[in-house]
Amino acid sequence: MDIKKITTQLGQAQQTRQSRNTADTGAVSGEKSSFSDKVTLDGYSFRMNEMLFARSEYNKHVQSAFERLPELNAKIKEYEEAVSDPDKNSGETEVGQQLRSETVLEQIAKSILGLRE
Image (cartoon, rainbow, N blue to C red; front, side, top):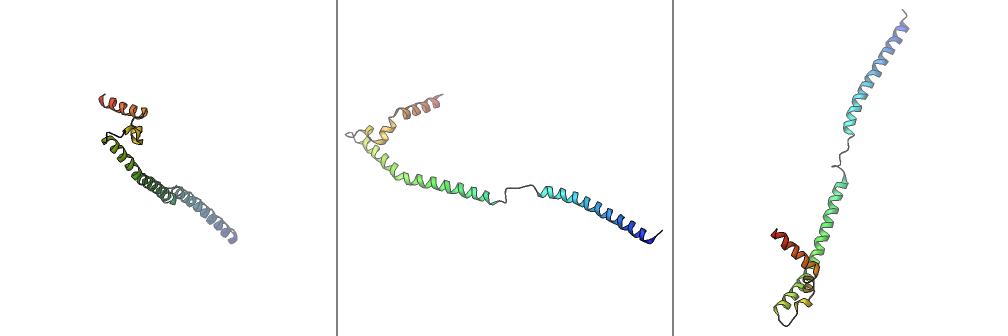
């Protein structure tokens, strides 16, 4: 046997072993990467952005409700004064007109009938 042939045969054998090992580790690393490739949405900033957006919208609604509160209290006081004073007609106030509208009376009747059933 020639020494040159032995070294080339050994070199080829080592190269095939290395290629097998890299193929095996590539498959294993591919499996590992498939687990790490799964996307979790918890770490992304848009979750926080959605929460901040919802909080700001909620605060806007609360603020608008509090801004309307004095106006509604004034309307209710006007209605209560009209009811307590016999000279004034409570139906002429805005709240009185709303209470005497057909849709409101219909809703009241439905809720009364719903309680009795």
